[in-house]
Amino acid sequence: MALPCALVVFLTFSTASEAFFSSAMLELDRESALKTLDHAIITKIGLLRCLIEFLKDNPQYIDEEMAVKFENLQRMVITAGTPDKVQNFFDVMMPRMRLQNVITEIQSSNAEVNTAPLKSVAAAHFSGEQFKEGSKRLLELKSQIVTSLLKGVKFEYARQLAGQYLHTLQDFYSHSNWVELENRNRKFYALTNPANSIPSQYVAKQNEETCISCPLAIEQNDNCDNNLIIQKITSGYYGGQDISKPANVSKCGHGGILDSSRNHGTRGGINKEAATRKWSPHYK
Ligand SMILES: [Zn+2]
Image (cartoon, rainbow, N blue to C red; front, top):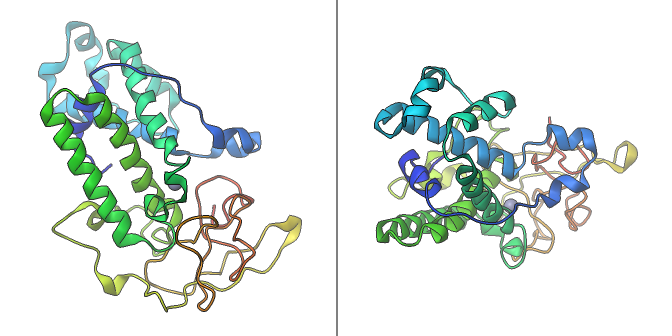
């Protein structure tokens, strides 16, 4: 996660909030839903990892009750595939409810980016090749978060912004071809570094073709295994957003049954956000 851990800790230890509703999961079939690492799960795991790293580096914040179990905490590595460790961590952390509430609050703000008005803003999702704009959005949000925290009275507002920040950052990896460019385990630091903007030679130009149409395969699922035709960074265009798929150049779509433009122009897409081909043509 690009937010420094100390900042996350400030965000996490202050007042409480409301319930989180994961609309995406309800629409998926059960098997896919269990396999999908959605925004809510990624956000929770990231926040807990940050808290653990912060406590390892700053043991002065560990109270007596936590100290009893801290030996285990030192060796703890949290991943989405280890729910028992997540539970162990919650058992150590006090007060538990407050921690759960603030994580929920950040998850809710993250989910709100998928509702109006931000739903239709391509830059908020790194869709439609809005890399410069998406990166600018991240830098602005980060600056607002820091300002809010420095004022010391706007923790709740800072958490709302952090949820939005994390949504946009997470979308970069699921909506672009960063993973396909053999960057499976690498982070793209230029996205959030004001001193190191994204080198333009690495990004597909407006008039450069990035995808070919996916042939229609069985069960109405497009076979998009080989639709990418470029070795530069690109992302999918999503129907209904403020940046439309161009008609005169073959660009990648977001793809999947939620993308209303998946059959317009270049068929199919490249998103990998859900664990089912019906939703995400590039899910592996
Ligand atoms: Zn999004």
